[in-house]
Image 1: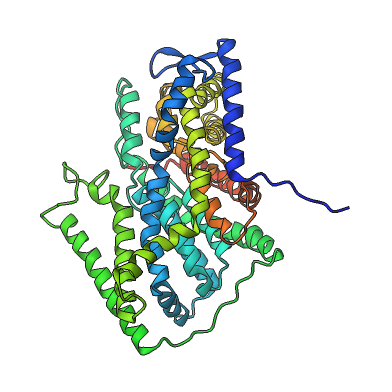
Image 2 (image 1 turned 135 degrees about the vertical axis):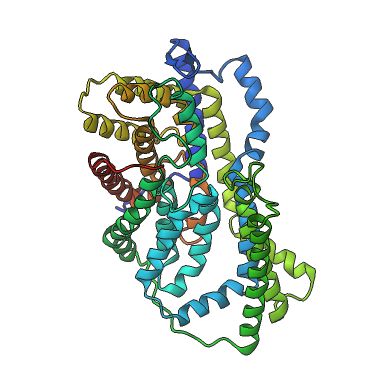
Length: 485
C-alpha cells in the first residue's frame, strides 16, 4: 500500500482560511465577543461578513483587494529587472566571474545571510528582490537555489529589525512610542529613531552566525538528503565579447547608481525627504525601483552589446521572462489578498492581539527580567496572527509601556523587546504577506511545494533565533548597556 502525503496547494490553503475566517467571525459576532482597546478608549468588536454590510463590502472590494495587495506591485517591479538581467545572460556572465573568485560555499552563505539581515534598510525589498536574485546566483557559489531561497528568506524575515544602519521601521516605531510615553515623567529615556540603534547593530553581528549555524546543522543536511546538492562549478573563461559586454554593462549600471547617489547625497538633495533626512525619503521608498532599474539597465546593455538583443521586441520579451515563470504567484496572490483583506475588515487579528495582550499584562510577574521574557514570548506568539509590526505596536504599546514603566523599565527597552519577539516568528506564519511569493519561487524547483515545506524547514530557525536573541537581549539588559541614543 502506497503512502501518499496529502498536500494542500497554497491557493487552496488561503481559500480555506478565508472561509474559516468568515464563519469564525460570524460566530464571535453572534456572541458579542469584544475586548478593550486602550488606543481608542473603546471596546473592539469583530465585523461579520455574513450580513448585508459585509456581503456588500466583499462584493464591492474583491477586485481592489487584489489590485491593492502591495506585494503584487513590488513583485512585478522586481521581476522586470531581474528577468531581463537573467534573460540577456548578464547574471550568467556575472556568476561566471564570481566562480573565478573561487569563493567557498560557506562565504557565499554568510554573505546571503548578512545581506538578508541588512535589507530592511530599504523596507520589504529584501523579500521580492534579494531572495530571487540570490537563488539565481547561488549555483555558481556551490549553493543549491532552494537553500539560497530558504536561508535568504529566513535572514530577511527573522532579522528584520537588526541592522547597522537606521532602518525604515525605526522612526515609525519611535513615533508611536513617543506618543504613548509623552505623559511619563521624568523624560530621562531615549525615544527617538536611534533609541534601539546600539542593540540592533550588535544584533546584526550576533544573528549572522546563529542563522549560519542552524543552516549548516539542520537545513542543508535535510535538503541534501532529498537530493538538493549543488556542486561548485569550475571556472570557465568568458569569451572576449562576453567580457567586454559585462564590463560595459557594469560600468553603465554603476554610473546610474552613482548618479542617483549624487542626486540624493549632494547639496541638491533631490531624493531626500522634506526635512533633509533619508528615512521615508523618495530614495528609501523608491529603493526597489532603483535596484530593479539598475539591474534592468545592465541586462539590456549586456544583451545589446553581446548580440543577444537586436530589437526592442527582444528586450520586452526579456522583461517578461521573470513574470512568465512565476505566473503561479498571481493565482496564489489573488486568494491571499482576499484573505488578508477579510482579516483586516473583520478586525479578528486586532482582537486576538489585544485579548492576549491584556491576558499577558494581568500575569503577576514582579521580576523585570522575567516580565520582559514573558513579553517577548507574547510578541512572538501574536506575530503568528498579525504580522504588521506597526499595527501591533499601535495596539499593545498603550498596554505595556505604562506597565513596564511602573516596574522601572523605560519605553526604549520595551520597544526593543517587542522587536525581538516580533521578528523571530515572521518566517513560520502563512500570514506573512510575502509568503505566497516565496512559495512561487520554490515552485520553480519543487513543483508540488506547499507551506508545509516552508514550515518544516524553517521552524528550527525561528525557535533558535527566538531563544538566542531573547537571551542576548536579557544579557544586554542585565549588563546595563545603553540600547541606543
